[in-house]
Amino acid sequence: MSRIKATPWDEAAFGVHTAEVVEYSEAALHEAAQTPGHYTIKVDPLADKQLLHKYGFYYCDTLLEPHCAAGKLKQVQHPEATVSKQADWEGLLAICHGAFAHGRFHRDFNLDQSRADLRYDNWLRQLYDKGAVYGLYWNGELAGFIAHAENNLVLHAVAATQRGKGRAKYWWSAVSGELLAEGHTEVQSSISAANLAVLNLYASLGFSFRHPLDVYHCLVQAAPRQSR
Image (cartoon, rainbow, N blue to C red):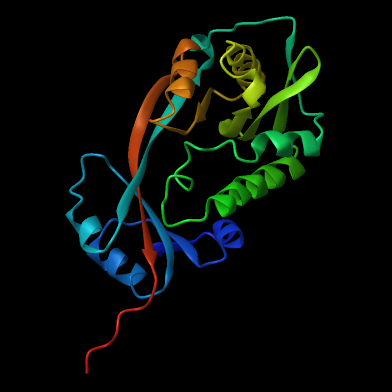
C-alpha cells in the first residue's frame, strides 16, 4: 500500500503537486520531503507531533465526524423551508464561492485564497454533475446547498443573507431524513471543530461526534540536495 496518495482534484485548483500522506511514519514523511508540492496528513489528536514538526508540517485544522442514526434524528419542519435536487448551477456557485472560510485550505497561509475558493467550486461542480446536490430553498428562493456522497454530507453552505436566522435546522433535517429514507442506517459528515455554528446545528438535530483528526499541511518547495 502506498504511503502517499496523489490528490489530482486539489492539484487542478492550486497548480502544484498535491498529495495526502496516509501513513504517519518517518518513512512516509521523508518520502514526501523528496518531491516538491503541498502535502496533507490527518493524525490522532493525541499522537506525538514531533515527527511532523521535524519535517516541516504545520497545524491547519481539527476535523470532527458528526453522525446520526434514524432513530435519533430530530425532525423539524417549516412550510417555507424545502429542498430539491432541481437547482440552478449559477445560483449554487454564487453561494459556494468564498463560503468556506473555516476550511483548512483557506486557513493555510501558504495557499492562495482565490485558489482555495476554486477548489471548493470545482468540487461542487463534480457533485452537481453526479446529481448529488440538494438546493435549499426558503419561500421558493435558493438559499444554500447540501452535497452528499451516499450517506455522507460532504459539502454544504448557506447564503450569507440566510445565516443566523435559525433556518438551517429545517434543511439539514430534511436532507438527512431523505437519505435515511433511502435505506442508509445513518447520516454522517465532517466539520471543522472551529465552525461552532455548524457543530451546534448538528448537535441540535441529535447528531453525536466521533473520530477527531488533527490536520497538518506541509509545503515542500524544493527537493533536498544530495550529499556528495
